[in-house]
Image 1 (cartoon, helix red, strand yellow):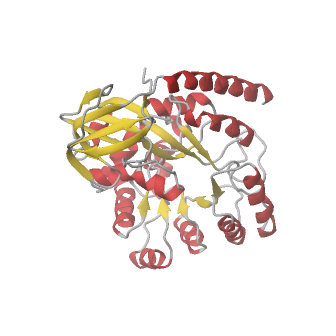
Image 2: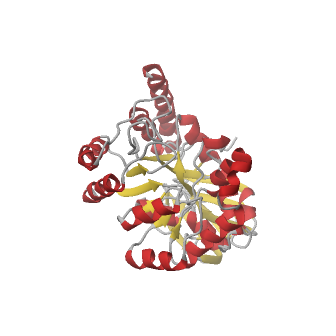
Image 3: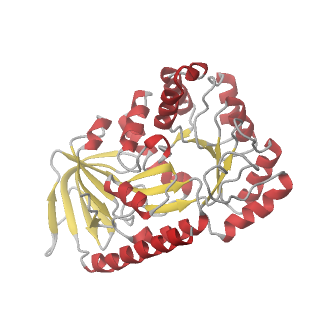
Length: 385
């Protein structure tokens, strides 16, 4: 494990040296005559000025200044860079793969804290995604999350909640992940409630892994901020959803691609769970009830990659009945809002120039997202080769 940690440090150091050179190459440019999805709304035929890594102006009458580079945007769309709300990244190469696909922010939901702290130093490196972490996820002894070959702190009961959260705070985590998975030994609802309470005292977002409807209802009733997966077993009753929404504001990261791949691997055993049509209907039901939906893919599970597979997740959300604009929000502004990502997820003056230029109109057809022409992180081109 020490050898791997040293290798990560070497890769991080090399990336930071490269960043120093890139910062010297930073300049101003204008994207003109382009359609913009700003994270909330669509702006027709406008222009953007980017200077020193920031979006400085948006409007149809931007004056071209000496030294500006001009990018023609006719027939194209600019959107904020994407965020993946559920990953498990084990090396800098994972963050590099994400960046090449325009995914410049990833939310890690369980990993080795010393490795994560080193990888987080890449946050300003152009060709790597920013890395926001939960550190070690909260789980029971012999529970889900303990099987991956590295030591994990576990909780036996509610009395362990404070020390667990304190440990994550010492590691400077960004959010708290909790695992409730009944196919192995799992945390009691009392323990989950105690973790949520301690996390809220520290102003940390709590994300709970579930696979059953009953567990989802239980943890949401204990004020969990969100769920890391959609439940698999059966649909939620309309009355139950209305009650939850009335009493709690929460988000769901459905990880539909992961779920459907898991069902494929189960073969006939998957017949006891909801089918694809039912899962998509469940997402639409949540969306219509006002629940915030976030896009996440849970790589590297089931062979899912850190980059382009998020396009498949967004396509599934489109199939669920969300409009292209609402689908784009699940991977841009919604993630930024839920996880408090400053100056990210939107195209607004004063925000970082994390941008994707797409050939075509992705605000009408989410599949056009695959036609990416350029990606910028803080105004510098990401190397997509």
